[in-house]
Every structure is written in C-alpha cells, then in structure tokens.
Length: 67
Image 1 (tube, rainbow, N blue to C red):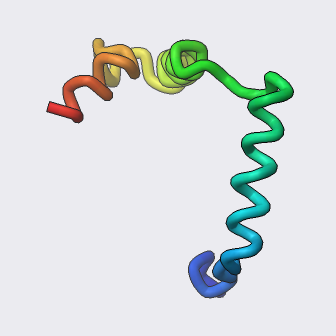
Image 2 (image 1 turned 120 degrees about the vertical axis):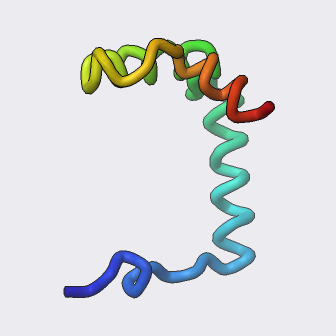
C-alpha cells in the first residue's frame, strides 16, 4: 500500500505563486472565514466528537499551546 507522502508532488515556484495570488483574489471577493468563526466551528465539531475530552474551547487551547 502506497503512503500518502509517496504520492505527493512538490509545487513549483510558479504554482506556489499562482496559489498565493488565487488566495488573494478569493479574499478580495470576500471568500474567507474569520478566525473567530473558524474557532467556533471547530468548537462545535470537537464538542460533537467528544463531549468529555476537554473543557477548553479551541481558542483557549491555542492560547495555552502558545505559552
């Protein structure tokens, strides 16, 4: 069975630049998720997956990991 790493192809500089430019275009069009909204979505997913796992929110966990 092939590992995922074995099937990944590196990007060229041109491809990376195009991906970055496409990201900037999408942001300019308003196609992005605010970090607070993203953390709320993650909290909902984590809560659904495991109610007993942790009492911290995703934002709190990021804060403690940064310390």
